[in-house]
Image 1 (tube, rainbow, N blue to C red):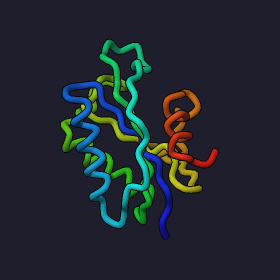
Image 2: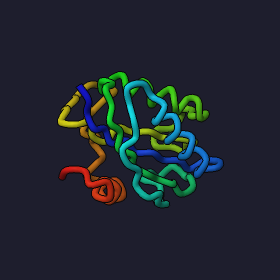
Image 3: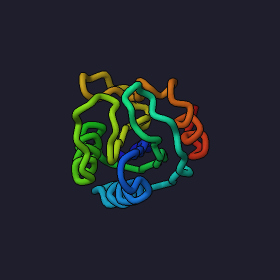
Image 4: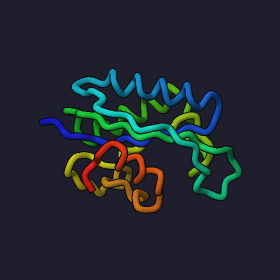
Length: 136
């Protein structure tokens, strides 16, 4: 069974455009998955008090046969390959990949919550979802 997953991409370190491009390519290469659509890229201010530069953000719609857990593990591998180091919560990062929505799934696990709990607080995610024609 396939679902439509909406993945948020973000980067605020190094060559931000290149990190997003590599992430899009890595997402397209996931097994039993293909990219349906990509939103525009936009620059946003960080959401934390941690001193850091602006982010480039984008949303991608994937058609995937992966489970939410399998997709999360794949996203973590892609982040690690991009040099992501998890040291400061909401700190600067080369690449951040978040599952924002995953079909009609509702997941409440310690390390995976779907829909993403910050969806209502991130207006750029809402704009990007609307651009992709995601259901409300």
